[in-house]
Length: 270
Image (cartoon, rainbow, N blue to C red; front, top):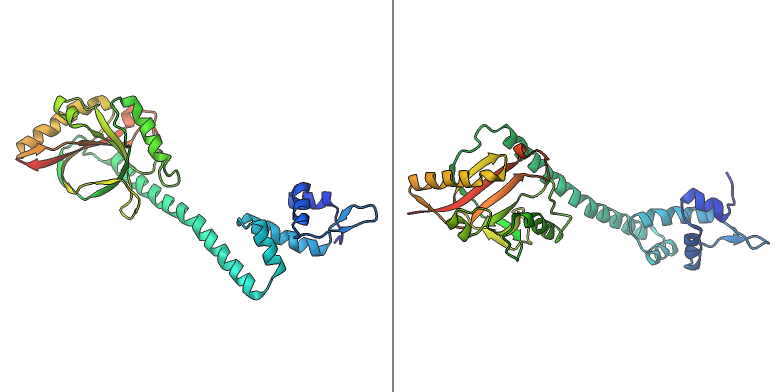
């Protein structure tokens, strides 16, 4: 094994630029010897330092933190470093674990919906309170929906995703419900987990008429009419705003016939 290495050799071995090596030397972390011709020579003493630098940089430690550790190594400081490493790893892992759990839930929901034989069936059910984040700006045009969802997603890209993550939907305005124009949207929203501490509002607990359908959104008037008819037959009246949830949309399939949409209408007794 060689005992001396040039700056070029060290640069290749550690995949570090020569400017970085000179910077670490300037900061006092490395101290290569000099040949008579002035060229730097890295010895085994620099090798362990470089190993430590590489590992600590991977974990996000600053140059000053690395220097402090190298200059004051002991069992206590090493124990403290390992504990910090574990904490950093846990902080990186937990968002991925939560994302995996959310995706697994979404996958189960999609699989259940794909296999269901109860599409287009009106159901009366009590739904629990649901937390949401939503757009502040009201909008009317259907083509603005994706922009509204993207605006919401950008608030926290680590938690919200248009692809197979949180359920997203729109509120249909009271005016739209009265006119039978179910493209008059009021706000776009994402449903968030019950344990989320950050949210804008909630959809209150209550009784809803619900219906899940496949295919084009052009079917909305037909299904809302069917829903309102059943509601009235059962002694209820609709209570705006209506809700449309995109269970599977253009972000998940290019085939319109595969779209899965759920419409929900809050109801009260006459």
